[in-house]
Length: 253
Image (tube, rainbow, N blue to C red; front, side, top):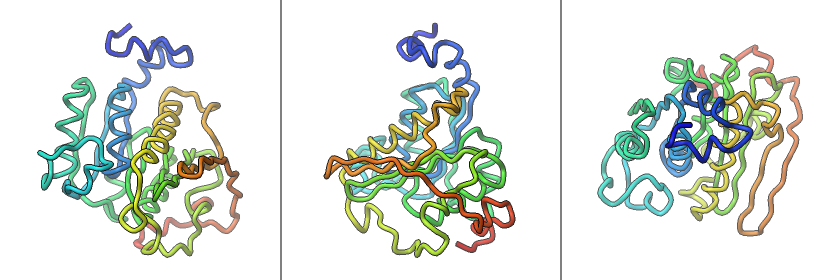
């Protein structure tokens, strides 16, 4: 056993062989803010082999309430480079790739393909639709997560499923008005809940435990002490699920 991962390797469904699979795995994480800082820590501590971090923003003082990788000394600096520095101190064995760029339909496939899982650490649906469309087009699992106020939801979309993010929120969503932490406020514990689920589902995928992946949409409300699991209906009219068209990669949300 590797001393660093000795406790994790004692978890029977994972074990030493599962840890070896994690070491060989690769994940691309878009967004290193509220969701992304939690996710990045979970994955780096778990021992994924390679993690690409994509973000174009800088750390602001108001981020420190919920973005757990950063401290006051990071304010005004690049998020991906601060994240790289902190994560490197946590686990120097993981290959970290900081990419200071904004994800678009034009650069998405070059940034997101070639990884075992695409993970959503963003706070907007334009980027999520881009990730969704790249994942569907290229057969890559996509871990979606969203939070606002004390409410959150998450789903791991697998290539063999005939559903996608558009079947959850709809093609007609006015993405400019979708709730975010900036518009509806947020308590930080909801980030921990949603990202713990996202990270666990990702570890299942990376270690081949696909039969343990939750196929339903998970919905959490921490303030009302409620959570639910919702089945997503297939949409025969979805162009993305049918492979006919990938609108976000054409700039059409």
